[in-house]
Length: 353
Image (tube, rainbow, N blue to C red):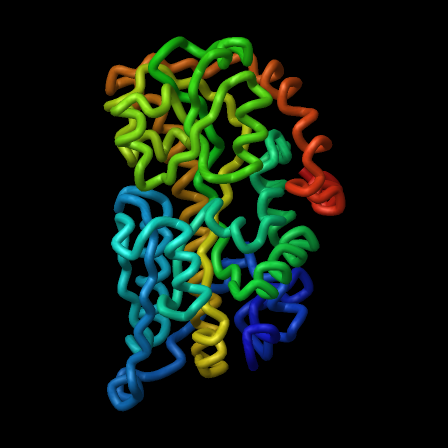
């Protein structure tokens, strides 16, 4: 089986790690991680000692408290356990292998087996911008169902066509607005703020719709940009504000929940094709387990993060006028059909909430 035949956890398959995966399965990978706990090691300790160990390098540009690293650690734990040590993972955090774009390029070329990235993927797969459409989802559950369904199938195929296997869908949390200038109670308070955005047309369009000006800064450089005043503020999930210590360089935070941050773990297709059928099953199961683990962690951490930020001296607004943001951002999706493909918007919104 190659990568075009083997990636997926099917909506129609009761056990996603049992049997032979089909080409359609590769386009359906995401979400179904319940079967992971039941998966037994496919090689014994003796067989693993006799066989060659396959090593996987997984890089990301974030600190070790970030969700990408938590995903990587859970993936490593599950993969090494369920493979009986036959497959081992080495994690490179803190931009040791470069920023998001560097990481994605390395995975695409095969100099890295895996990488965790966000908007950097859109340099090659611009259609992935749809996951950053403002107020696209009514709930997390809706987004998870869409990722596991036709919406996710479409994006997985587009990514594979550009040289990436979407092996993980990481929920990094609903985004909030932070800044150093004024409390943000409604969208009108965004006027005259210079807000950092990722290097993404989708984020730039959304932020400009609120009335703010923008400056593109990579996540690995954001703390310094805020400290030096390159930007007045930024928007990331509260858990990222916490893990990356932006509370040290920001005064105000508002719970706007304008985008559910969806990032990705990508795998080099040639590496995946080099795995045996059993190794592929364990690899897929470990990815799904890491997805599920991070989803649960993120929801819990998000709920606790605002209290933590308040304890660190930030002024926290848990009830801003979200509707004013929704109204201001509504035209963005229709105005940029090249970023937010209408057929993908339709599939996303048709998914049960």
